[in-house]
Image 1 (cartoon, rainbow, N blue to C red):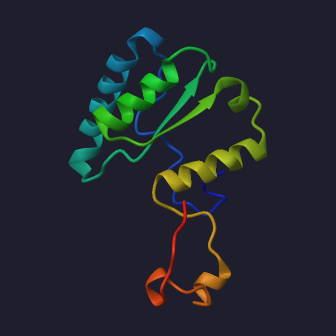
Image 2: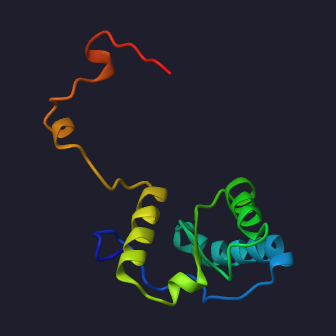
Length: 131
């Protein structure tokens, strides 16, 4: 779906998928990250994204995973629930692709008026902001 949406996306993972126990999330993530970087760095590449399929949305696994990826590893991650992934709904996969695109620096929408410069920039005229 990422490819269909116009993203350059390698469909082959750097490493084959693995399973891990929730209580070992930190160890599994750090080991997996190290293994991926060991494979990628000699080629001058980096790991751009980690896709994680979670068993359910209960517990602290999601929060732990996001914290480790973002703060310890500096890695962008996309989590999906097993029940959604195995349904293979085109709409669900399209929504995940949009989320991935933004997370890796892409943009999903552009205002036509902004492209034609009909929307003034904040620096073009005096502007007030209210919160």
